Length: 399
Ligand code: PLP
Image (cartoon, rainbow, N blue to C red; front, side):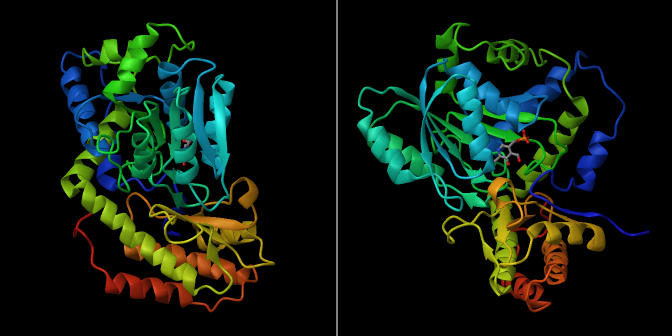
């Protein structure tokens, strides 16, 4: 009767109807003789979304955090030195995990609003002539601040000094949404989850692993960090037969089959272009709102999957979010950690189109005015409309 409660948080994202239908099926036998055909095809096609021909993709019944943990436990040893940077809630949590798992973290602190500091990385790597640093970590898309980092630039920094460290990338809110090139960029471990660009419920941790990272795992020969549930060795043994070492989330896997088909039929380049166009509409709206600005420090950092938006001085972003939720049936993303109360977020990834986003912008605009912001009602929607009218979709029927 009240229509949908609209979801514009940066994950979980909207699940397209065909994907929802693909998951609506009776329980199935995960040891059936024909199950391997399904699993093998799925893992092979996931590599296409990751843009890799060699290596492997693992799918864990976990969220993205499980894939973070698996990447570390299976390729590094306690005490190993790693290079990381912290510029938002998710890069912060990855650093916390690395430290709790016993890694020796060399940390670059960065202003929230910028991303991976390429110059610092290049300097630190060049100075590490005896190659003590075993891995370099980069959060490609910091979901808390709406900042995208240059992963090709991190690869270039490694290559410039012939550094052999592995490259770990958090692609939870970027893979299957914005440009990601596992093989071209020489990424060794790439973490994702089901509930963002893959347009599924939460529940799958997806991990791309290069040949080099598989070799690092082999070299541990079962030693290194304790691991069990997330063990590469166990997963490889069973995946090679087309099964899993424990009960797989079969419905999510069927949904993933459907969403992957949609993504690959559309073409990854078109998916990336669609997100760029959608993000442009939100950025145009923010520019039109007096006193609001992106948390991202400039267009070079602004993410195509999520915008974190500072509210004007004197306005509490929590009022904007709760107003949008209760009065306009629209969920906006909250400001995380030090952005709490200062910023709200609009997720623009997954199954979305311009008219849906104009709805989100309209709800945000009404809630901003209700919360005391001196913005001109309609100004953001008008700016977004102009952007969408002036740009054309990469494909007519995007997922
Ligand atoms: N990394 C990033 C960039 C994220 O956005 C998230 C979740 O939003 C995570 C990691 C953690 O993933 P999950 O909540 O699926 O465990």
